[in-house]
Each structure stands twice: as C-alpha cells, then as structure tokens.
Length: 310
Image (cartoon, rainbow, N blue to C red; front, side):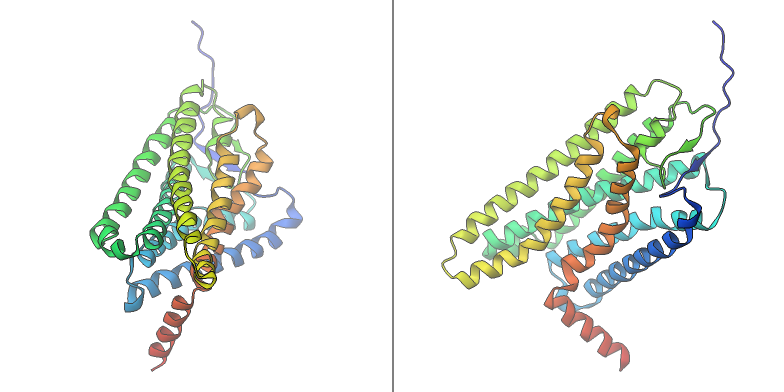
C-alpha cells in the first residue's frame, strides 16, 4: 500500500476574533478591559469570601469556587488572545495548543457542575431552611467541590487525548481565537468519528445531568415560594434566585448551541462569537450578577476597605 507524503503539524496558526488589520488594536483594548474587569471582579470575590467571617456560609463557599473557575477559564484564553492582537504571527505550538484545550475543558466542565451545585444549595436553603446547615455541611461542601474538580480534570484528559491523538497533516490554520475542539477536528486528516463521539457523549451527558439538577431544584423552589403567604416574602425569595436563573440560562443555552448541533450544521464564525461570550464575557459578568449587587458582599467590601485603610 502506498504511503502518502504528509508533513506532520508541529504548530498551529490562530486566525483570531477578526482578521482585519484595522481592528486589531481596538479589539486589543476592548478585550484588555474585559479581562481586567474579570480579574478584578473575581479576585475581589475570592478575597472577600475567604477573609470575611460573615461570608463563611455554603452559598459563599460555592461562589468563591465559581469565581476561581471563571478566573481560570478567562486566564487560559485571554493572555494568548491579547498577545496575538499585537503580533503578526499568531502561532501556537502543538503542545501549547493541547494544554490550552485541556485547561479550557477543566474550567468549562467545572463551571457546568458548580452551577448545578449552587442550584441545589439554593433548593436546600429555601425548601428546607431548618436542615440547611446539616444537609449542606462543611464536609458536604468540600466533597461536592472536590468531585467537581476531579470529574472535570478526568473529562479534560480523556477529551484532549481523543482530539490530539488524531493526525494533523500540512494544513494548520485554526479558524478561532483559541484551540477549541470543533475547528481542531476540522483540520484533522484522519477519521474523526471517535473524538466526535466522545465529545458529543461527554457534552450531552454533562449538560443534561446538570440541567436536570438545576431544573428540578428550581421547580421545587418555585413550589415552595408559591406556598409563602406574604407577598413580601415571595418577592424576597424570588429575588435571591432571579440572577442565578438568568445567568444559568444564558450559560447553558450558549453551550447547548455550541456543542449539541451536528458538525455539518456548524458555522465556525457564529461559534467564534458564542465562544467570546462564554469564555470572556460571562466570567466578567458573574461577579456582578452573583454578588456585587448583593448587600452582604457590599458590606464585606466596605469592611475590608475600612480595615485596609486603618
């Protein structure tokens, strides 16, 4: 059997958000601001929920880990993206690309499950308030977060290995601003049915399980809220969940759109814009959505600043 003379790929070229030269500097400053706000907001949440004694509850424990995940997710993507806005050659080595994809998968899978854990936490707090501290104990909190990180790390290894075990020959231009699964598999010169199956099963299983937990939790929350006789009490209970429901809907909706459609229906340009949203914009917004509008966090920030100035 004749062997075809292919050149194995040792590096990839990222096209970036836009290939227009006149947009590179403006986009650099836009995404620099977004990343700066992401780092500031999430580090603030991590610091406040770590040092303030009044924020040592399960809800803020999970919020701290959401902030860690959001910061990690943005940091895997944004620095390389920002550098590429300023240089002419947007190259990344084969192994650097694999590490970036692996890191991205760790944090995105962890976010999927930590959002489900936070929904369960709100369910117990509203539906079983007297048992809250017993059901969501310190040990349970550590167990849930540890399992989330362990599972996300395992998923990342399996998925990354299946993607990078494929042969990549000659053509090495990734139509994206980071190393993502779909544009990578589009470059492969071997049969990609196995990694596509792994990705589809993993993504659909993860999303369906976590969405089921979120929907079941909020279904029971709504039933409990409707039983509250006081209109003020119902309003207060609904307000504690509204931001979380909105953020969860946007996040899960974007991921469902990205990964659960057949490959032949994919528009890489549309996927690229959706990726900007859930890798960079959502991590910037989450500190505001979940806590910067929260009176407890505002009070903690005021105490922190007062103590720092003294």
